[in-house]
Length: 306
Length: 138
Image (cartoon, rainbow over all chains, first blue to last red; front, side, top):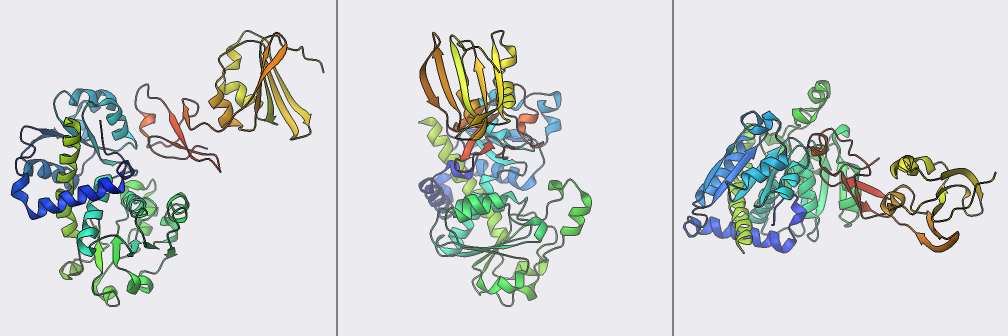
């Protein structure tokens, strides 16, 4: 049974197929309106996430399927102490596919090992969030026409930002990528990602604390939020949360075709005044997230039916 | 110092000096009722100093554990007081229930009866990562 737990579960060919399907859905939505008729998606959200859960639910509804599930652990049997393995076995009796978010890292993998239906990792703590990566890939693909020969700046929390880790890993499989890492010293990209991904694949990268100095080089600026929930210490969070705030004046030296991306939600790291700049792509990203999740649900259900 | 030769069993040789107790613990040798000898700081041409463990019983030896703790070890298989086989070990691709993940955010800290699985991600540097959360083993 094929699941999506880590973005590397999918080959470049799989990703290309998904992106092609997502693009076709955008172009011909009516063609897909009943593709999942009679199928059920279970959204098992053991921690709150409005955006991801609603994106999955909207995706399934637009495919003609239906949804069931819960949006916090307190309203599930986990509150009674049920294991993830037992939850996965139980839900397999009710639904055709699972989308799971869980605060514990590796929980969706445990679910996939025990379920008899496909499992999609909708975020496991600070570890993986592969459908956000799919969303980012579709956005880059649609904005830039492909992935080759791009300079991508990642800005903000590069230490705990799982979306950054996953996107760098996914992009490392394409040719001619240049990476610019912009963060405070304390939130630098972990050395194992630099070593295991960037250095291993000979991807040129540089690290800086100064966003404005590298702005003219960038084709894509991927902003991130400093996440309160990833810190054990509130003082550290308060000290680092305002490290980078993107304002219109900081975009003056940027390329005209720069794409500003953000996995959202934002707090204050992108000024609202930037929203009207045509280079701001983060709300398009949200929409792309729904389409790529539609493509993913379709692919996994089709493979499960074979 | 005299230690009797063994009849049927194993001599785990070329253990890096100081690591024999870790191997003893991980293999659960304290549960055996046969003779087990731990010889520490033996002179070695190859290593300078080494440890040796002798087990006088034909037990089911977990090569993965031995390979993980010390991939330079050699294992001599003894039958009727003679060495019949000399085996080398290497870092295993996967470790199951040998070490535990120390990441408090890992699902292995809460899920019932889950196997603690680590996979080898960098053979050159002997790096193992948790299958579930990818935290590096210490």
